[in-house]
Image (tube, rainbow, N blue to C red; front, side, top):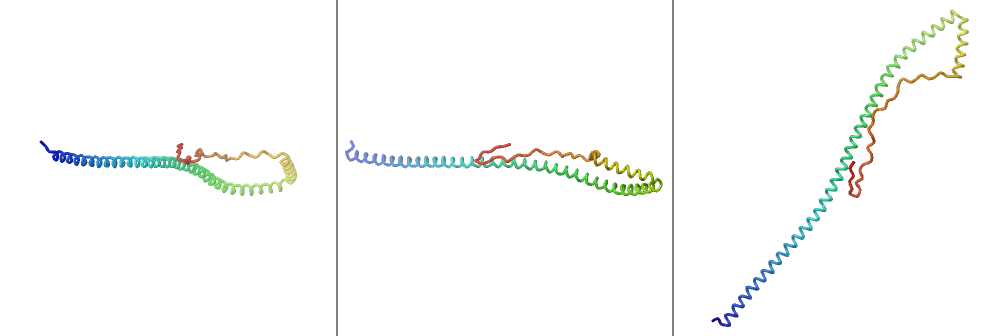
Amino acid sequence: MASLNDIFNAINENNATLNTIANEIVTETNAINAVKTSIDNVGTKVDAVKGSVDQAVLGINTLVTLQNYADQALNQLAQQANTIICILEYISKNTCSLLNEAHMQTDLQKSIQLSNYTLLELFKLSHPGASVEWEALQKLRRDIDRCCPPKAPELPCQYRPCPAPEPLGPPPDIRGGSTRTQ
């Protein structure tokens, strides 16, 4: 049979083993708490990254909205440039035609003026009585024209506007993070 001393020693060994086990449990509990704290920290960091990602997405959406508006504005400018080119082509063609016509008309008018002057002088020499009546008739016509001027002839050139694009409108409102697409 075991002595009391043997039992006491066995109890002390069991106590030492229990203390070791208790210390290991405390160490494991501390390790588990450290892992839990790390997991909580990772969760906090994930939430922070999620907020940053949300801000980045909002920023990208804003940039996309502004880029879409810039594309529309560029298209609008291209259409307006086409309209300007069309108008300039009309002006260029009409200016050239008018210059050519004015040059021909000037020569014709000089020739007609000389011919008319020559005919008038010949007529006055050969018909002095008719010349006096002609002058009276011309004075009467001038008086009638002062009273009732003749209707002005219709102008040959009628302006035709070129097609123009509709106005683009204001850029999208991106204040406060809201994005509005057109």
